[in-house]
Length: 333
Image (tube, rainbow, N blue to C red; front, side, top):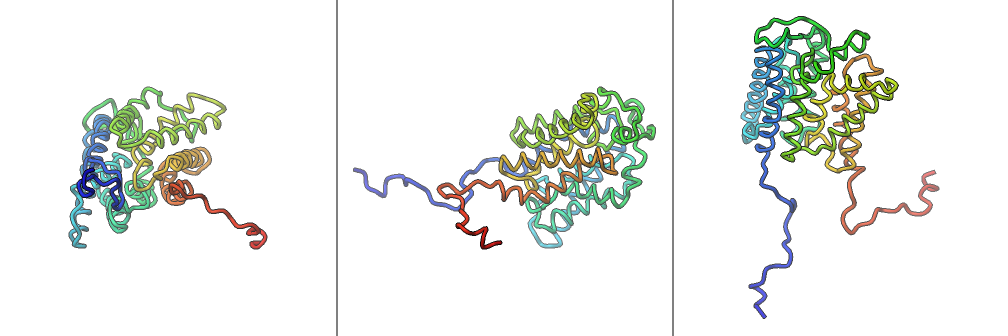
């Protein structure tokens, strides 16, 4: 028999996490940036160089604010993890091309300083930073954020465009909607990153293939809106497709509802979270005063995410659920 000290230990006792991976935060954020490239190219194609200006300014402000705040608080720099770049891209994708450039830093300040860094940095924020920045801009500058939208003439690189309404605004007034093919390829009015469904689906497929996100939340979110649209319209499939291709549904479901820090980690929690996002989106779109509800729906479910996660957390292995003692109801009464 070999000496005991020469044998490998039967079990290794260590602090969690016990399952590790070679993937890093920087690698994950880089994958998200790659997935957003098709939507960025589509935005520049349809809205011209103005879209690129808004995007570059948003990313630059987010990275700059994070670097300056970390420096002021004498904390290690985190701009290298690319999370600020992702926040800047998502914020820009939620803005119209016509937005005055001086308003972009306001949204970046809210997203990075208030929502992200003041709550501890990446992973500590309780709501999505980019969405919060967008909502603050919407509530503060409603005319500029939801007024005249630009519909490009063809695919020119200039600023030649005509003012129009978004498909959801057209639907609210029962005006003629753009064709489904136009909405699929992005030739419609809207925020920079939400118009081209094809580009967003390509980015989502890339993230799922790389296992950066699970398809569970996007599928349940989009599926809930699809079912709600069918029920609301009396099973009008054209109306349902228009709802799926309109607004920020695909952008929100694929890139923002799947945020690690603000969505549940349990499988059943993800389903409840995504279905809740879909239900609130339908509630605002069909019965609310605003034509779009994706941002508000995700933000609300972000706030409920800790509760959902707590209610759906599995039992510790080997433990049983605590049982109420007999007569507890009587005593409570």
